[in-house]
Length: 308
Image (cartoon, rainbow, N blue to C red):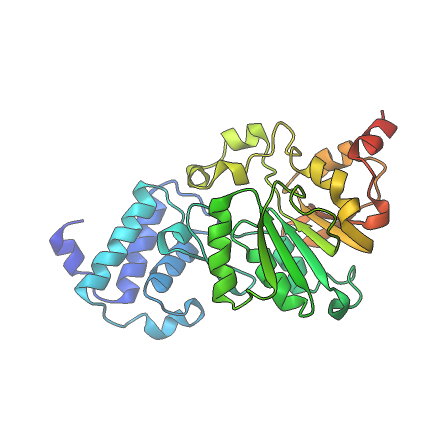
């Protein structure tokens, strides 16, 4: 960008217009919280300036300093040239009204389980106040653990991840929400380090992207940790051990909630006789399934072999 052109950008409105133009000039992908070039530009510009996105119109005609303009232009160009998601550029993401600090050590929060938590997992949880223990497997940034702690006020939460880097990010979010006395972060390969612990509720947003889909993901996803995305040939490499062991870690009448993206067909093929419910989310009813303790198999293999 030339000095003369930069001098023509004076207000937030000017920079926002410039950002939308730049984003529309390139084949960018918007799958990390924003729907299109305008939403992405509005999020990046306002949050980089620590302004409330929902009240952006108040500030549109405010003049920016030269330093602020330079900062915004640099972010816009990095979004275009490096294909970095806006959330990584500004170090924050939002899920169901909750703000989370993030960086490239974790995937950007976007779980559909967050929608179900916001509704207190109704109608599957009759009394939110009666939920005393929750396990969040593959916690990543800790976003679901934090939301669950707010929704289920009487629950203690164990948030598990195999990635030490992810747990460091989760620790920051737990601290920022003042939940250190209720959310315990545990390095573990799924249930491996949990001993005989049992929970009323087990949440899991595992890696579920199939090998084929992973190879075709837009460039933006290449900045996220592959460990948090790759689900193997059919997307169920992590789902299988979760289902296999969940029953021994759930209390009677407990509930397992698992997100699988567009993997409904694979799940139903793998577990044709396991009673499950597919929750309706903003993306349809193929994303998240729920199973009661008593309906889970003692071993996943027993269910699969029964259909053979």
